[in-house]
Amino acid sequence: MTSRERVVAAMNLQEPDRVPVMCQLSMGHYLVNIDMSPTEYWTRNDLIVDAFTQLADRYQFDGILINLPGRDPQAADYIDRIEQTPDAEIIHYTNGGKCVCPFDDLAVHVEAPKMDIDDIAPELLFYEDPHTLGGLKTPPFYYDLKPYPWSGEELFPEHIFAIIDAVLAAVGDRLSVHSEVFSPFTQLMERAGYESALIGLIQAPDKCHAILQAYAEGTCALAKKQAARGVDAVLISSAFAGGGFISRPMYEQFVLPYERQVAAALKDTPAKVYTHTCGAIGDRLELMAATGIDGIDTMDPPPLGNTELADAKQQVGDRLFLKGNIDPVNVLLQGSVDAVREDAQRKLEAAKAGGGYILSSACSVAPNVPPQNLLVLHEVVEQFGRY
Image 1 (tube, rainbow, N blue to C red):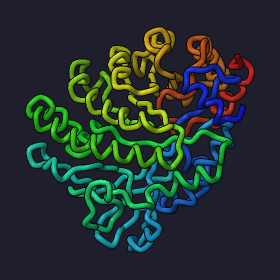
Image 2 (tube, one colour):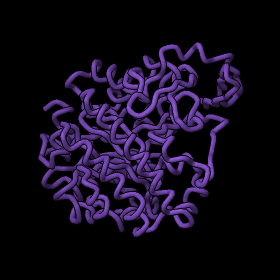
Image 3 (spheres, rainbow, N blue to C red):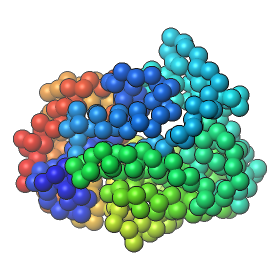
Image 4 (cartoon, helix red, strand yellow):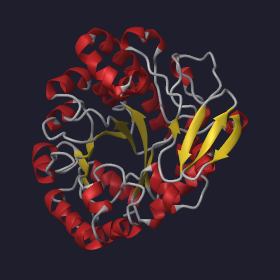
């Protein structure tokens, strides 16, 4: 089987020739392991594409997650100057904004506009992405740094699919390619700020529902456009919907209905849809399944979360594919090669049977994870992951 066929089979709850392996790498990990300028990486589609494909091949992963929108081909026109510091390169934009691009971490936009829940107008919202050039914008949102009067589905300029298109062209049918959208809940958290948004769920639930519905419509539209480009799956990034942030009843009220809309929007496409939620999700696996998704990503184990892989397999493994559960901190970052090997074998023992499992780090691979700790994952699935 090709790597792509292997991942697709697992997502269809089938047994491929062996368990596929596919980790989500952090932006910092790309920067640490590929010699390139962080500002150029942040602004140039060709360098982002090269980084995604180069490390997927180096680690012998079976798939690639594309978690950045394509950059405007005229991005250089927005840059006034680049400041060099010991820890980062700082982009000074022509509009006065700044973006700090560390040599080993995700870029951070210095001016990130936050709004009180009361001041947010749902009718101006559609979709928001903090990883565009310039980060979040004052609603109505627009991509990159140049405002334009588009609204609704016109919000998505063609170039934001440039990385997806280029990666698909580069790997062909060799690797499985997945895209990413931010969940409505994550967009609410980013727009209002996490503390303010969480308080808003209690003090202004009706307003929050109106905001979430507006974001759901935009998220559905973008997910369908990504699926139309030919990705095998769309990941819903819903990182902060775990037990460390909201209770199970609040998940059922503020997350489930809107992620259900996103999953439903993709049901008439060939693409699978799965959800990435960090931390403690052991008490909401059934609720996540109720959204209509095809799979669950991360499944942080103790002590980072509370998901035991064997329990998750028993609870929802007959309906959903499972991806993750390797501790990205205590095992991948701080552990030895032997510790990673042993943990990966345990994951296979817990979830391999019957298919439907993708070996992966629970959350993103940290910048300074030793490459040998990732290379060993392929060795493990070759030796112990065959059906």
